[in-house]
Image (cartoon, rainbow over all chains, first blue to last red):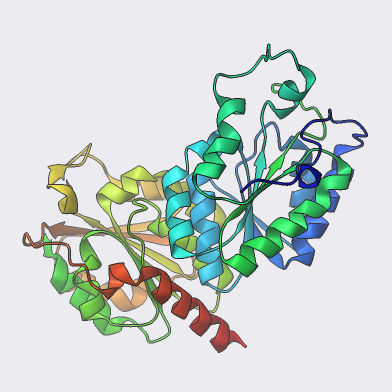
Length: 193
Length: 192
């Protein structure tokens, strides 16, 4: 599941060139729509805050809010079984909670695209000394978690990276497997504000 | 209390040829025999998520009736699904929960809240229509109307524990991915 440097979406650079979060969100939605995504299951969270207003305003995609992240994966898999293409929008910590249903959907070859807020990705980028202020384990576990499940994964950390969402969609439905796009915050939303 | 397989027989008798049935756990041995269909989808190894898979199906295929055969232990693992169903309000989904108070397939240990948890009340609190049956005759009589919802519904069926029998490694389990793919192809073809 290793990504080439060009596909990592600047894994080694800071989020330079970051513009309005809504602009990046619209571009991501454009990629989803172009890939035929008509349904999106969602648990709102801080790192994906920049997506919230935009995704709810897009008429092409029906947004279904669920209570827990595992429901989102199951719903997307069921949608594929029913003939639709679906994506989900959650955060990495919630993804960890959904390991079993992720395993099942992979085994059943019911594909969908996971847009996953990458909490503490920026923090990791800013602090290159290794003294990272983070919730224990979040940054260290996110990519290994997806690798352990064999999920093809891309990182979107700049506006220019949004094309990778289309790539993730193509991979999901061509290979009939869930794929993941890790999203760094585009609006630097601070929880509680 | 209702004999589970007698309920499944009644449901099979009214199940339409175009209905999709998503089932999990203890019906896994009997349901495929009672109602063989390419539109059966078994959710095994992902306990708790049958209703969430079914919701995705129902939203993707609004022209289809989607029936869920869930267990009480499974439902407890994903209780938020009732709120999600009440929020999404699919008009083509009926959710049956077979309540025997046990994790029947994994050693018959009682579920938490056995005898106390009231799924009907929880479902109503989540905005769903909900009914409980502990006798077969009224349930069988109501099945046609229960299966014609214009809003999501939970039907609680209080069942006796089934006879102890090994979980069978049938096609339902072994070929689950292929069967799901066949169903997907069938649904897509019917829509084309």
